[in-house]
Image 1: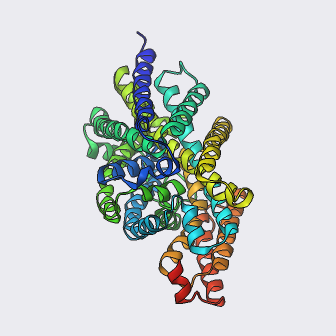
Image 2 (image 1 turned 90 degrees about the horizontal axis):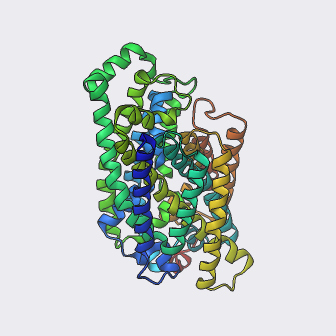
Image 3 (image 1 turned 45 degrees about the vertical axis):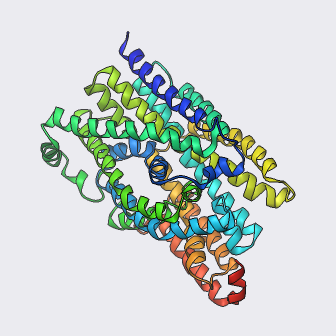
Length: 481
């Protein structure tokens, strides 16, 4: 058996096992809208940990982090900072969000905005922002899957056929089992992810350098500028680093799928405990960075930094182990992609289509529209993945720049009675427009700072100013919320 066939066989076996788990997860349950979107609000500590790890530690973690370590250097370390800080943010905002979800039967992020601000037009804007900026994140996962299968099969299977197969599988088990499928597939995904991280993150530095310390000594001697800001870039300096860490830490639970996943917890305490233990998983990311750094000296001149981890594994380990690593990477693409598709479809059907075009629809009809949108959104993301050319981390940062503009509406809505719908709407519109203009005109970073962070600052300023200029909500009105 050829090395490519052996590696591909292992990958296909792992993907098949993950898909079978996904289909089985909902086989014995009636998939009404509540079960499909929030799994009956019954996930305990372990399933919540696995679900949220599945959302956060994605193809970006598996390929993008090592890719940026290889091609950018020091700026990559923002990843370790923002994810750890994000769990601090989640400790304070997710429990009250869960309480509101339980009390008012909220299922999506847009449901929260509908409950708090009572404006179908603001809800429509929030839904469009959520869906629009989840598409690059979904494109990232599908592209990553294609890279994994292409490299691990020794180019026997092209990237496009691999991406097409992945999208068909994803749409299938999302349609069959909803959120419960994502959580259960995460069990296999996280187990393999940890095995992969420990094996390659420790094994590769020891194989080529005799240890992690000697590896960094060799790298500092060969490429000292790679490990100080701005690394191998021209403009990703300290200002960009700080502003990007803040932007992404505040935005990580503004993704509609992450926000909505909080509603599936059994209790608010489950979310607090989850915030305490989740940083442990970040250790696996550190090991992935080691592989990208090692590749700088072992395989210089790669055309695409995102290929560095798989190229190192292919060079170092036997084909069957490349298959295990490839299978783990494939599931890190499939799990978050599934929940991104599910969340986008649900938000479109429930919070955009029904309020604006068919207010008389019941939940069963909403579910039918959402299932149709699973297919549509999957096809759109597949098209963009086939024709796109951005690096995995660049796609993620674009998504964060837009999605974090929802943060003022959430945090001010939770903790400040005076905030108004007009203020949130105006701030959101300006924040999204300004960051989009800076991205389109290639001015990110701008004045050394993240374009998304500058948009967020303006967003907050406008929301607060307009809210102070409008009549405050009365205690009686607040009590009815």
